[in-house]
Image (cartoon, rainbow over all chains, first blue to last red):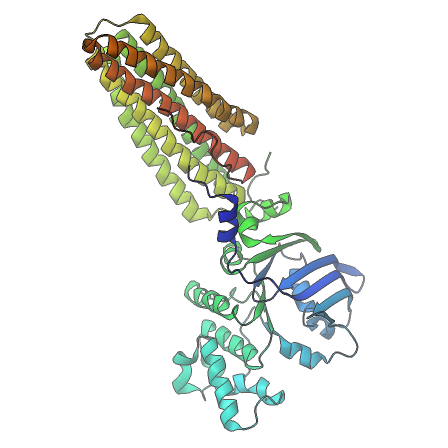
Length: 271
Length: 228
């Protein structure tokens, strides 16, 4: 049999040779919703210009974790987060941190496309405008066009930028939401099941986009599709009952995972 | 032992594929035995039966391949399941080739049947064949039991086949040098010996596949050294 040598296998498994830079890090992250503990001592590193996939059965804590990364959990009164989460080595739960600024740096795309009930243009222009990212109308227009281009949507909507964003198809709406997230020049983009409401073609477009976005952004994606995690991510973290069970290179997780729970889950044996 | 899949039909698919590999294995093993028996006894009708069996073995592989491809398409297997299916695909290929080796040996029966057989040569061939058959049997057992220790043993034991093959090769050369009238007969036997040696190689391929299925790691080939 033609087997690759260890060195060759390693090279094939690594998408690019750039040294990995830690962009975000969670250390001993515990989350409680009132009395109920949702996350237990989670340690997870998120590397720059990589896609990190969070997988695990429903209720395993992956969405809770991703929502900690831009303090979306702050909006839930009964939610308590402890431990440390850093962005570029700075604790994002530090009282001095401006949450609005944090969320501009760590953007989010949700499961269901949720465009504002405004025009396509306004959907994208909203963020840069409130963050004061443009000095004049021309600059703002430029940001809108570039963001739509990066989200792979511009060509489809360039003639109707002032029509309602809600009039687009589901897949287009999701790419609009991605354009909206990109418009404020985030460093990290969090995606919570971004394709679960999309058909296979729209899903493929978003996956293609994720791969392109990785060059400039760091991406964390929660997905229930094992194939999607295998396709788009470089690292995969498996959660189970609030614990981080295993984290490794995606290629390893889906061909030869270390933990039996991961094996059971990704092969459809988890009861 | 792995727990069952939530989708039980997937377990049925995998069981059926494993059974298909085992069936091919049993078939190929018996073909090798019959082919060598036909050669040694000069039994032409047995030789013809082996040639016919090869058609059946090819059909089994075709059916198994289709089943594996369909299962991959339907279930989108991951990790152990994926390795199991890819492994089955590889093994089916090795077993089909093993059947080809048996067929090749059987086809030569008619070319050696009229010669007066020097007994030691045939005994050497028989010995080589029994070693290869044992390897095949052991590796198929290792597959059924997912026994990596036994698979590793098959890899190690291949050396013995290679050694016996090499000494048989030298012996045949000696006969050819002694009397040029032996050349035709000895060349036919040499091809048969080579085919049997190849059966041993397919057994080691299968052993490597078993290691891959169970451990998820591709072990570098240990039997890569070419024989004469």
